[in-house]
Image 1 (cartoon, helix red, strand yellow):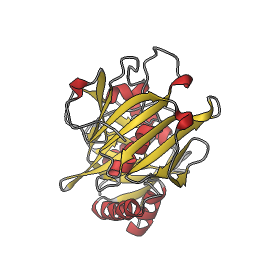
Image 2 (tube, one colour):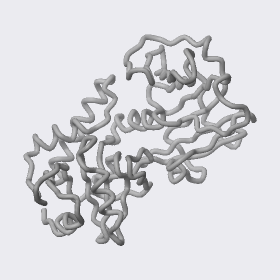
Image 3 (cartoon, one colour):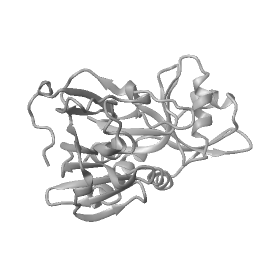
Length: 303
């Protein structure tokens, strides 16, 4: 595995920087024919050249000749994870492309450097590409988070007009998009994401970050805020806030999290992180009706 060296990215023909959840990725290509660019909402998360937590080099290749190591995780038809001598290897396939993986990504064991190899025959010549396109960017971030930084959760994150942060957690169908659209209409409020939020430790504090991996409302922001309360969404016959036991809150939050399940140390960290979170931040079940009255209840709710 080559990956990026510690030398400056100015040596590369194309390079860019992305920051998601407080984690900075340097992405580069030395091939003049492999131009890189971010797409969609990820553009909001690009930034000027800076120090990076992980450095990734993109290149072309013929993946029909690639051989993986020992398979340690299979997500289904989209991607698989292999363990090699000194690295992790993620392979990505699509039935629309063909039998050969369209992309392989290798990272060192600490996820500080890596490379993405794209199967050249599958891509149109001269078209700019985002080598970390979903789900690779999310996979990379969740693995770095699990090394002592934080966790990604299924949630809608909001900063209200008083600059208070609120985290609304729930699986698909719980009402995250509905909640996000209600806050979107509230002047002065910022929706960090309508589907996936990163929770990260910074010093002695906890922050929630928006991510580019949005839901149906397509709301995504690179901003961050400390969460004042955590609400687990539930549909109800009226708007009401119900306190939760820490044990209940922890199990529900873990069920909505995205840890690398194939890594025992990562799982142990995630469980400890969540246990600390529910001890430090009040957690509630929020049963609500889809109207803006619930916003006043949240903003006036005292811990």
